[in-house]
Image (cartoon, rainbow, N blue to C red):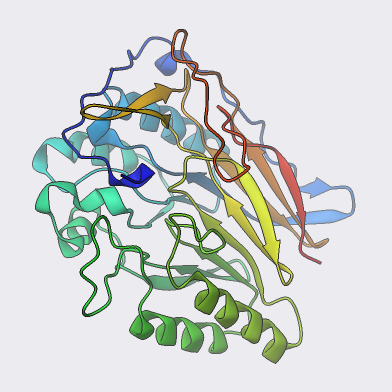
Length: 315
């Protein structure tokens, strides 16, 4: 059974809300200038809260929203596996909607657990669509849906495809803008291990768009899903994996996977500067006492309870 194929009925140890509501802000106010660079846009990002599989999802999300209202980024985005669209999850959405600025959603594979449809998820979240794009502060942002199943695909487990129709839309969408592009997708497009099955074809869309434009048009692709923390680059396109707001998968138990939860929720603030750099400021934490694990390697990437600070050169 694969990492992301565990049953929704898995029994999970809970996390108390102790300390989360008292968290101090992780980041200071973003500097308007950093060296010779001027901040163009700031984004608050979280992913893989898995509210339906933990006991303190509202507290974790509240900590994120509280700080985002303090920092006032240009927008916030959650990159999937937030919650299923059932009425008992409305209090979580009420927390999300406390943010006073623009808010965006990416659909994750677990958001349809329990037999819900993607259309129900879009409606419940008040998301723009299953995949879509928007412009902000001189950048073009693309949100992809990595949860499609190709016609005739009878494989078991969660679908993890971007089918031809969406790939054609992606190509046309990128071609239609003259702005630099940032992409969000729940599953990794750079990582064939539990990532998008057509990752190579999607990367080719990005690389051909850059060749056609004559500059690094598609600059950064962000994903969640793996609950890991790493950065890859293929043909001058950067692929950033964002760690889970809540936990890491551990060893397989008889009734599913075990979990190691972080003491504090994780998220990041991403700032794009006009000097050709993207700065990522990540939240640091530890695993809760007694939940540290003897981690098995995940394709060479270390398992860590934080999101790394990074400077990504896009110039």
